[in-house]
Every structure is written in structure tokens, then in C-alpha cells.
Image (cartoon, rainbow, N blue to C red; front, side, top):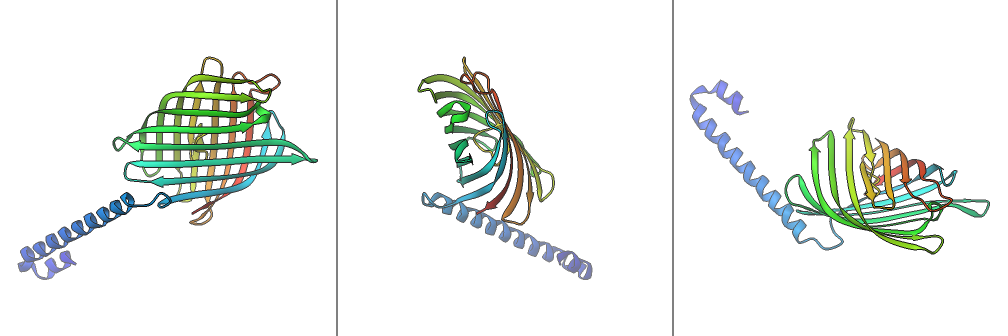
Length: 270
């Protein structure tokens, strides 16, 4: 409008420029007020406020320690703060054949992150797994360390984290072991189009995104790789195909080192 006014009223160009400058200043002040209001709402939010999440339900095909098809369900919750981000993840895979349980795998994790800068962050991790067909009735991991956002673009995101870990494993034969370990994680997301996303997960922590976690100690190295393709059906509903590889370098006697799992699921955002 100002440009057109200058063409039709060239003698008033200085006054029009002043009007535009005053308008721009007002818009900047309004944006700053809105940002401060949003930040204040986050600071004063209650414990159960500002959470978002994804619910996932579908089927799977497993090979390795079991060769079955079954049902899978997952829940992922995230709370974004000014400096803090909290992530809760849970997943269950279950299969019964002729009245006999042939697969029973549970996973639960909590990961708080604190931003030190736009790219550098500190992470914590508490994780629980149960998979009797892999040879353990419970496996606990606690870890903490540093992370860095390597690529942070609209189409592509890549971050890495590294830190020490402590792992306790309760085996199905009644034995238990505790070991100091190390954790290396990668998180990758590629937005191919507005409705199609490729994720690579080597991270047992966040299977709904793309990540990679390697936990290693003197006795056993555990790898968890997940590659997924998400296709948006609507703003709230997404279809997902994912392929998982789980590897333990030193599994209990009678257990396979490598398990694979193919999942087809529907994800609902809330």
C-alpha cells in the first residue's frame, strides 16, 4: 500500500516512510509482547500442562528369538519448556499363539533435556526394558551427558549425544549383573515433503522419531536401530512403517544375538 501511495503521491514520500516506520515499530513491539506472554505462560504452567503426545497402534512381524505376528501399542509424551524438554516414552508388543505367550516386550523411558545454547544441551535418561524371549526379565539403564544439534533445518534435523551409563540386567535364569557402560545416541529426521517423513532410529529412547543408541560395556554391546517412514493422512493422523534391528553381542545362552521387527501402525497426535 505504501509503495502504491508513493507512486501516486511522490511529494509525500517522506511522510509515508515515517508512517511505515511507525507501523513496523508497532508490529515489533506486538511480537515482543506476544513472545513474552507465551514465555510467561510456560514459566507459570503447572506440572500437567503444556504436554503434547502421540498414540500409536498397529501390528508387527518379528524374526529372531521369536517368529510371530502380533499387536503393538505405544505412547509418547513431550513437554516443551523455555530451557527444559521432558520426554516420556512407552511401548508394548504382545503375541499369544494357541494360548501360549510367544512375544512379550515392554519398554519405558524418561529423558529430560536442558538447553545450554541453541545447539548444545545436557541430557538425562532413565530406561526400563523387559523381554523374556531375549533372555532378560528386566534391564535398567541410567545415563547422563552432553548432546549437540548438528543440523537444525526445516527439512533435516540431526543431533548426537554421548555420556556414561550404568546398566543392571536381571536374567530369566535368576542371575543379575550390574555394569558401567557408555552411551552414544543419534537422532535423525528428514521431512521429504509436507506429508512424508523418513526417520532413522538407533535409539531405544525415541522410536517415534529418528534416533540411534549404542550402549556398550566390557561384557555386552547393545544396538537398537529403527528406520521408519511416516505418511500424514491428516493433521492428526499418520501412518507409519518401521523396521527395527535389536542386537546384543553377548546374549544369554540359547538366545539369538539379533532380533528384527517390522511394524505397520497408525499414529494419532494430541
